[in-house]
Length: 138
Length: 91
Image (cartoon, rainbow over all chains, first blue to last red; front, side, top):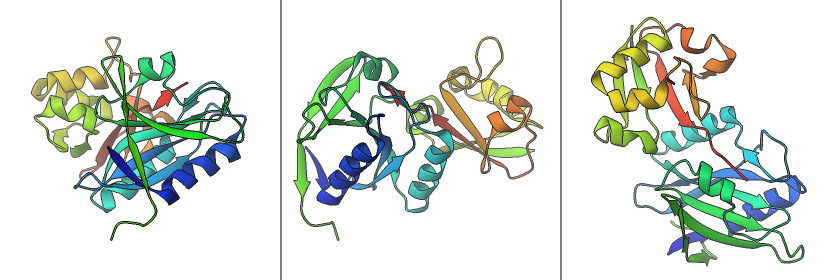
């Protein structure tokens, strides 16, 4: 189970809406205890409604931000503006790290976007249960 | 010049789990060539068979993306930090 704060879900949803009709994207950082600490909404360098590439310089700055706090970049999130929150064949093919968490924002039902989490290991998709918490960690 | 190379999680398995390694060279390419003698599996991820930088790897020297400098010919100063990041993409 992956626990994440409500503000993080809101940040991903707002980023998805702001980038619509293009795909939004960003990175996820966790602390040494594995607690999800931050989502970084970043620029989709492709400005595409069907693909994304995280802008490398923004990735670098997010990495530095995480390094300074002793966190690790441990995942990525992105939106599917027209389809469900499930990894596409391209997501599976390009998944950079089998240890990462992949959060998807599905906007197929425009009024009710959905956030789901997955692992992608050796081409296999497995879903992670997400527990949204209303209060931040101390 | 000796540079510190910061490795992303996906590449640490090729460096005995280390978060950073050190290597010497006058340019990024020379540093990566030095890595090929100490960590050959890691070097395979940093240099394509044709000697170019792989498409799905981003390399920064200190705060600069080497694609906007001189690529693998980007010079290294003593104490430089080379940060390797995977290109993150999907659809």
